[in-house]
Length: 215
Image 1 (cartoon, rainbow, N blue to C red):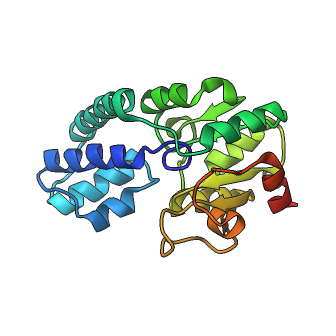
Image 2 (image 1 turned 120 degrees about the vertical axis):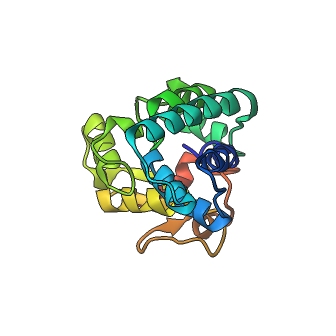
Image 3 (image 1 turned 135 degrees about the vertical axis):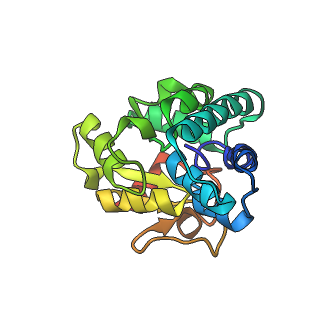
């Protein structure tokens, strides 16, 4: 979802930097990069270590609540779909392709983004707090395949972060990456949209293109 379908990573950056400042020290851009695609606990652990703060349950809960409320505000006022995303979702739905949205974001935060994208595009949605382990564990994608009643190897996953790509690839999905730059980490065995389509955007991508890429 984040970064793949919607332009939410800049919004996550705002909330993540603000949360790190609440802990006492603003994350560096390099450390912020390490939080992309990960869980909230991963993010707050990185921020706390950077700030020299020892985490406890209350501190985690307070900053989780801050992040939830800040992201809800940002999603309600600034969220936009990536170019070509809605057109591709509409085309896949028209072809009868069952789609599952798989995100590391907790349901409480993700709900607003899912509504903005269009809940009716998806037969299921899997959020980070609904599986035993989030990405980069393969469990979110294994769970999505179970919900569909199919083998993961028959699924195509699109992911922008190295964390997400690793999750999908380790689950056995055919994985296509949408890294934001040429030098971004791409796990072995993952092809990128840039390689396949000549662009990092969904503009012009059709269901026939995806079928051709994965056959």
